[in-house]
Image (cartoon, rainbow, N blue to C red; front, side, top):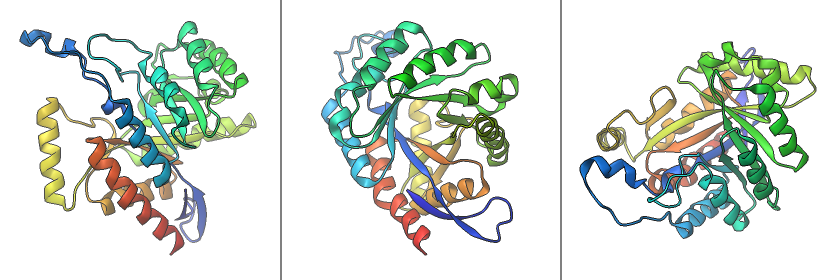
Length: 298
């Protein structure tokens, strides 16, 4: 989608920025039964609902979102744990609409080969494998995996904590990543990281988009949103979006954050992490995106 924003250099003129907006639907997966073993509870096998997932993807597509993603934590069944359910599930529902599909996988040869073969079949939108980067990651080896993905027409996203970039070879990272998904709650830190990554990519004749993860809890008013956030944290037993940008508020608050981060030059787009997929996804599609479009046309 295109949003009119002030330039990040002088704030004196306006330009049209193609902001990439995606949503993570990992929460629609099954809850692993191992989480309840300590309680001595023998639960029936739960399966992720593909019709529900397909419905949400269809809504995201028609509502104007650019892509959907599933992390490697996504599980198709509660009675087994595998790191490849995300990409296998995505491959089964890629025909839902002309939208991008991103699935996280471990950076290992057999997993990359399987993921690339599955996502290369995407026709209407685009397929992307996502790799989590740690300080111990072998970027040279991942670069080889990325080349095989690119040769098959599959994009590659690096997911990395902003404060980790100083320990990495940014030039090497920028040589193969098509997008970088930043984890930070500081827009100024993100702005510096984005500048460094895009500059490194530009010197190599490449385009690189930097996205920021944004956790969202959306309600009709601030009090209701705060109450939802408290309930969600109590259910999870921990803060929902620790170390990440987040908004607890109304659709206006979410639109304001997107506009401010992109206008500052801290990101080329965002990946929404809904605290409750049906509720928050509907609010993004019916409230946040129309607001951003209206502001871009003002």
